[in-house]
Amino acid sequence: MFDVSKKLNRFAVALGGFLIFVGIVVAAIVVISYFNLIDMTVIETENIQGLVLTLLLVVGVIDVVAGILLWRR
Image 1 (cartoon, rainbow, N blue to C red):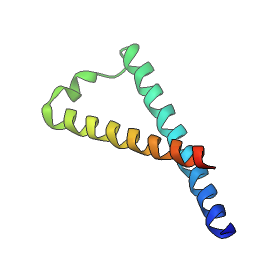
Image 2 (cartoon, one colour):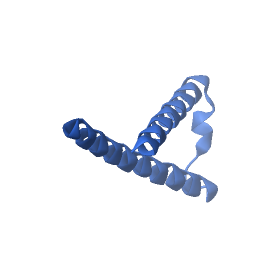
Image 3 (cartoon, one colour):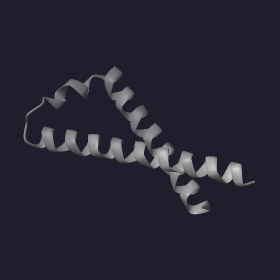
Image 4 (tube, one colour):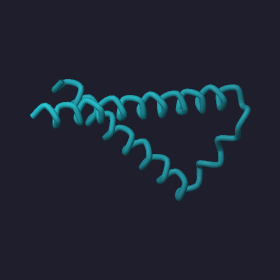
């Protein structure tokens, strides 16, 4: 039982670190696009827009899983 708990704690910490990294990257992209340093009209095509929405959905699901893991600790 202790080994499973230790592995779950390591996984939760790794997942939390990944989510912090993704959050920093998204915040940086928002700030850069706010100051018009990059052209955000590139994601207006349907193919790329679907990809961006899928990536945001995946990050959201991972965030929910991390929340449940940390809540159960």
